[in-house]
Length: 209
Image (cartoon, rainbow, N blue to C red; front, side, top):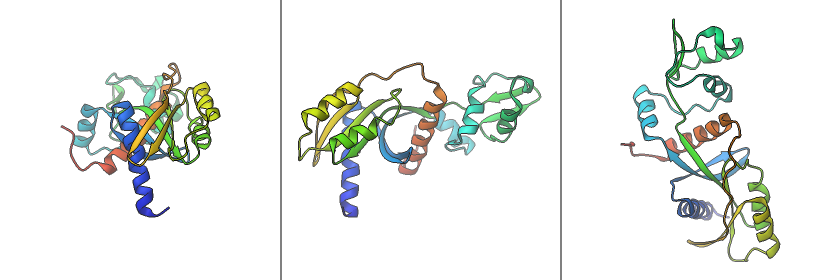
């Protein structure tokens, strides 16, 4: 596929997920795959980071340390495991290290609601979308020139994965994604949101007001 064709394909996937979720979308790499995510930006958090000159934090080690600390509440260093104490002291801009203890200054930059993967084959799209945890709505996107088989539709439905056929600038939802599962550790959700925020910062040219 030509470069123009690839860009057109990406725009179609971004548009389809945006229309289905009603949220802004960004493209990014996650677990070795190019995906489209529906991302709700926390405008207040973005403004705090912009004022402090702090961007996305994508280090899982730092995020695991941050997750131990309630927002804006001082936690004595002795209450934090030694290895995470060192990581927090290196998390400049996100943690205040004062005599009172560690204070987390920032929160997740937003929330990822849905993850979509586009492939020519519906079965392949479903298989690759299924790699992602069900804490997100998952959407398999496939070319609509050849309608997905009944087998593909059933497989998507059984897995709780949405199935969308894209043809040019149009798309048709064949299977609705299942509701996300709650109760999964939230550090992973925060990390994915930071990756989405990094992509949003790259794509965005207008400040959030």
